[in-house]
Amino acid sequence: MSNQQQGLETYVMARKYMDVSELFREIQEEIRNSHEYLAMEVGQDNSNMSTRLTVVATFGLLLALVTGALGMNVLVEKLVSGKEHSYASDWGLILIVLFIFLLMMGWVIAQAKPLTKMFDCLVSQFEIKIKSKK
Image 1: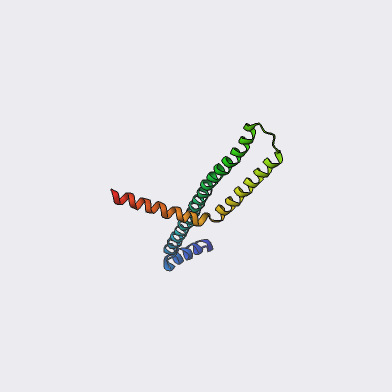
Image 2: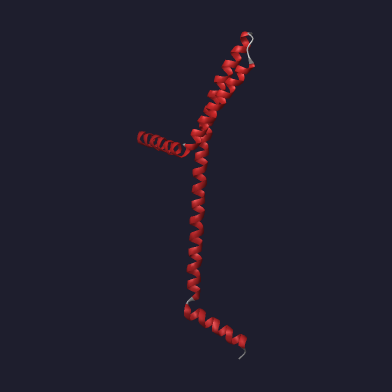
């Protein structure tokens, strides 16, 4: 009997008596479960980040509209009246509005997680009221 055949027989006996096939299947299943769990965690993180970005975008849009409207009304009034005015005051107004906008956006970004939780609570309350009416 050659060394190669003897090694092959030893390998087959080891697999048979040590139950390596079953152990391999168990480890493979554990790896598959771990991969599914990690994929689920990544999906939840992406979902949470998407929700937080939606909150920031919603408040950002509202703030942009409000600050834009306030700034435009003052500038348009000066231009329509035909009176001479200093452009330095216009820049000062623009800088003040920009500062307030950036300050409020910073606050919204810092509070995105609590605001997201608040929106989730509001949505769940709204869903409960709708379901109870049906």
